[in-house]
Length: 325
Length: 280
Image (cartoon, rainbow over all chains, first blue to last red):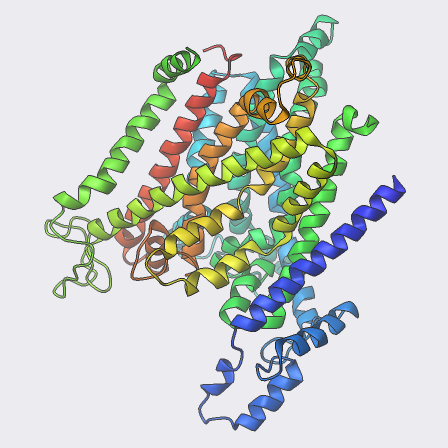
């Protein structure tokens, strides 16, 4: 087991290095950080621009391989370089990860737990009113993309707040910097409401659908009938035998969703003006920020591979056959 | 014979029936609607900027005087095409790669799954975002379809693989092996059909997923490039001033939701029809 894990780790390190390098090369050869300095009024001397870009390792006059070498040396020692205007990518990333984590951990967990529960209930009560209601709602929600949903939520809140005459639910930003102490905490929670709804609604619908389908496949199988025949209560048979088996595909999806959640919430973050990792991906592409693009990619790759590992662990925990072999 | 049974079940299924009717209506609207409307999608009415829906411009006009009815239908045509093509390519790829990896095991499995891992860690959003705005020639949207499909099959192929691992041990597969049927034939005749309920659900989710994915990338300007339009580019434009000029947002967003909804309904109906254990 130890040897297997080590080999797997080595492969993952190579994959991350590959992905980050590819992103760096793609960004470094196609993006133009010089543009941000050239268009300025009053004009900046070319020598000054060159010196600045050299300092940030962004100068397109340096061969791309030399720049890549400098960047890679920095990354190996844990330094992701500078943003297009000289800030530290490391600091920016640390701040943004915390912002995203706060927003996404709740949303993802709520989405998975509620989704699986609703899906299982729906399968057990197939074609009954509960099933129809859950099915229809999840259909409708799944058909609404997150940017439409978020825009609708924002419009509704805007109208609600205007109708009430005060801000009941906040719909932009992370917090109000003028408050402090406990008020600040409440305010942060208030800012979390809308993004969390917009994030978890889609997940709930998605997981309940997957879970319902898998659960239905399992419910008709012999071992569930055996479990009931040997005298287990219906509830025990359903949760311990049927749900556990039917959870495997959903768990695989969940582990991946967990890994991609940092950049997956791009729309929610952009629309509700949270400055997290997802928003950074779009911002850095639009700002021609080569080092940030590479850093986001590096981070995403690490998350995805960690998720793949997590999904294997989850499947092994849920499926005895995998553990034995 | 089996297809006849499936078709009969499908026709009896309410969801599938309403879904198909809705989809047919929407497709007809997208492809026949432009002949009925008074304006072409390239026309610009310089006397009516941002006018609300009314007798002349049925669904209102945009900031540069385009007729929303014509532009939205044009965008819907593109979205439908993109959704179908991407789903076909990506589900097919997922089934083949996943089944081969799971059935053959060994080095085939390792290589294929390594490829899947590599594609998963490659920054798909970044690659599409950087490449697609640079493809401005005539058939650039086909490249966009290829890019979308190339980055959307991996997770399903992992699920297919893990299900193939257990299907491989079933008696009918073993029987086929002892009858000397070649392994690739076993995969297409015994493994893939037994995954059909998963694959069909995946394909429908992929049609709607691709339509949404296209709209999502276009939302940031990384998808379909102007002057071409899709539902995504229209929604992106509309959402910017959705409180002031709701018709810019409501029509493309509403049609997108209806389109995805009807496709999903058909998928679910198909599942009930295809699953022999279903008791409807």
